[in-house]
Image 1 (cartoon, rainbow, N blue to C red):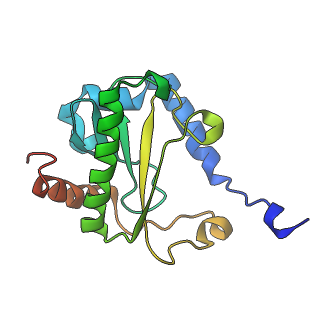
Image 2 (cartoon, rainbow, N blue to C red):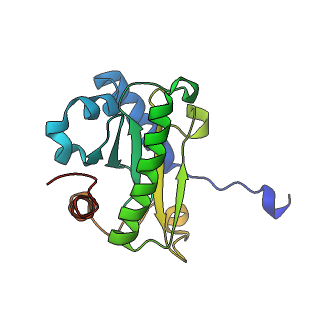
Length: 174
């Protein structure tokens, strides 16, 4: 088999997928819960809100500062998004890049939306975009060989730093 056809297994990903399925069955959509409860923004790590979308830390981050931008209403098909929702998701994604560049000194970013469970969407019925900060040399085999991702800072600490930057940028009030 050619080198480019070898598989790279990521069994820890199933823990995430199963947790999302169970949470959805137990409690409904967590993104809808977050959207409906702004008084719980700190607990839910919601950084800022727009008219149609909200920005939050990912509870299962790939890297420190991994954010998600979600439409506030429950919709999974991108064709059902209004032009205003698409515009705000895009604007918030790029604002997230600026916030993350300031706070975690990211040198690059992956921005993407997983459409459908087979494409990696843990919550396929509520569209959201991932903004993942990257650094030169940040990929390694710790996750593959050790089954562990190294996240150098806690969610609460990262949240506080990102909120401060969001306030400075006028994305949210104190």
